Image (tube, rainbow, N blue to C red; front, side):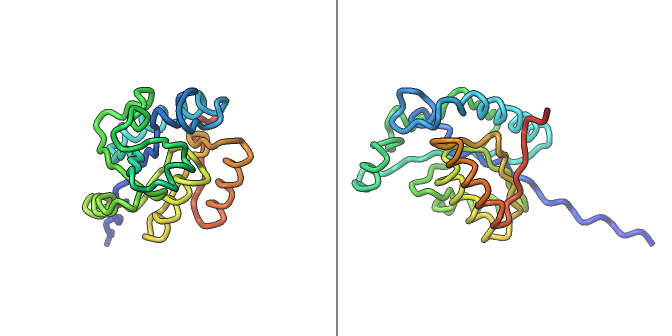
Length: 185
């Protein structure tokens, strides 16, 4: 007697902080300039694949609150709620996607993300995003704690330097996140 295969569970693509203040050269807290083009190309490829696969796509953007004076000072007032720098960068078009704001490093600070993933039956997340050592790491770690399978698209992640990005990715890998390339030669 044949048994039915277990459902694979839904997958989600989390796009983290692709905002003007982090991508633009004149932004308040830009990532390493030489990483931007490659990250945008790799992210575009991941979005195309996720769309073709029918995955849930979630854009997550910082919307830091004005009352967080010390944090805002340390971030050079980047991505303040309602500011032009908090706007989603048009270079990362994600078509039929959901947008959720966040106000801390982990996207899970917004309970709507956990609720959405649970409601949609998501068991695996792929992550593309900015600041590998901060928001990407915090979100991936929280996803792992929630029992989700986490895949970080290493060429679709940027940071302030190559060294910082690679160190963050290796720490995530040791914690259980898989690392993959979107652009395979």
